[in-house]
Length: 339
Length: 106
Ligand SMILES: Cc1cc2nc3c(=O)[nH]c(=O)nc-3n(C[C@H](O)[C@H](O)[C@H](O)COP(=O)(O)OP(=O)(O)OC[C@H]3O[C@@H](n4cnc5c(N)ncnc54)[C@H](O)[C@@H]3O)c2cc1C
Ligand code: FES
Image 1 (cartoon, rainbow over the protein chains, first blue to last red):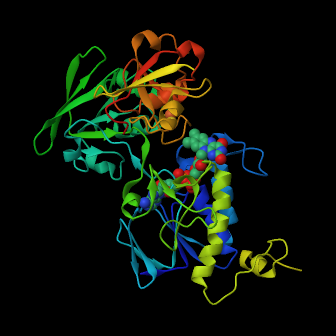
Image 2 (tube, chains in turn purple, yellow; image 1 turned 90 degrees about the vertical axis):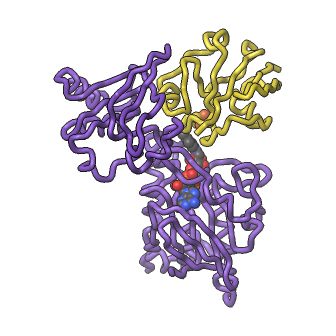
């Protein structure tokens, strides 16, 4: 069991800045995110798009903002637990016990939920028996490509993941790339290489088709794809790889007994505590009258929540408001050399 | 105010007045119309505001841009008349617009 002052659910921009606000007050935090990296929506949905409304930063991309936030919290040596989803929260002797999908357990007086619109998960295929084959014949990411050697693979999608894996797997397996349009979103040079392979008969490309059904018993035997006019063709298939991006799923957060309003958690605006003492919600996931889903609002919310977290984690100490420019304590925590 | 009709797959139908300058997505969210999730808040990054636009209206809308088309690829059961409702701006000309929401968004 990992003991800490605050468990932060979500490593989006708001969760990251909360680490800072807690850190300068001398509080340790542990951050858990379902993604394989920090940055939330900024890194997953718009890494290259410029943001123009971060106070004091005229322009920075989603990726740059993430990098800067990580740089800013470096002095606190925070532990990140990636590829893990927070599943369960329960109370034991006045502390919160947090459990992840990898059965890691945390104990802490405070939990800050900075979960955005939920955890990012791959968008699944919607045909009816897709679930049955998931993890067996259907994959939404590739962890071990050897599995696909000399097999028949049907790859769905029009973006970089679909194109990159088509190119890569065509070296060892028999690949069909299927996309609903003629135009691909992925890098043109990758597409060109794939088209060359198609000419040599090493890859097959089917455009303007979508998956209509899967045939098989214990494992997949073939799939049927359909065009706009309803014309169907069958393709012998051992494995399906599907790359339709990520979606956000609120998931287990709804089971934690919090006051929900649609897909958000109600908080008070004094310290962003939820209806449960010691559980806070900040950033896109919280709601209160006038809430704006902006990064800058999330930063403010984290600052206020951190004060209440301090009071709960250090009941015998007095909270003092301090400036980073003048507080020796804060500067020591930041590792700043003072004259 | 322009009237917009939202039809669910079940046939349930709601017609509401939406302020000019809002998007068809915002009109739905602000009026608790089911079937439109809009998880990214209009950022054209989630495709959970996907709708089908009645043929006669589809051609009257400004053309679909590449970025929107790319996102529609990822939507649930896209068709020829698919649009992202966060990219349709409500104007006087769209008075009477009819959109159908898909069976589900994810
Ligand atoms: C295209 C686009 C453009 C935008 N432009 C701007 C802009 O210009 N300015 C602006 O201020 N805002 C902008 N936004 C909004 C901004 O990105 C969000 O307000 C911000 O990302 C919210 O940060 P967050 O940390 O609250 O949540 P998120 O960034 O959503 O991060 C939440 C994280 O929590 C994780 N998580 C959730 N549940 C769990 C769980 N149970 N277990 C583990 N991990 C979990 C998720 O995987 C995710 O990584 C834009 C959004 C989009 C989509
Ligand atoms: S609201 Fe996300 S794409 Fe329209």
